[in-house]
Image (tube, rainbow, N blue to C red; front, top):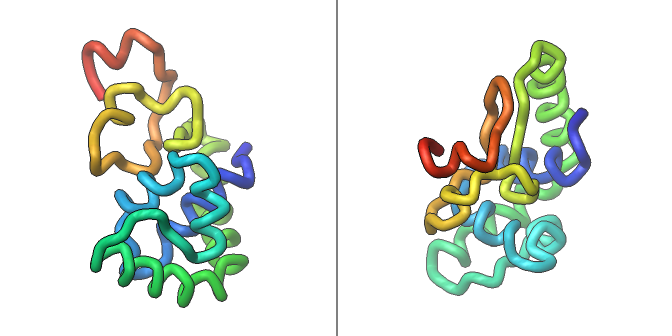
Length: 120
């Protein structure tokens, strides 16, 4: 079952013109998901300023985006597809180390701690 944090992270990724890597970096920071929900970012660059503008513009549709996420992801999860996000404990450690980390991964099977040494 999807947690609200996961739904919100994926919904934020559906906002057009907002870089997913920027969302992932911000979400990992303390209070990051709350800042994203408020349309603010801690990064300061021209890209981040534009992203914050687009984020605020897209947040008016957050409930619709959440519904779209649930409609797309929940059927896949019933079929055995799993999800991990930068907010989750099982998100691969080696991916946490890169600057442009993906905000989420869909996978089948399970993620094990020793997987980090051999794969993503």
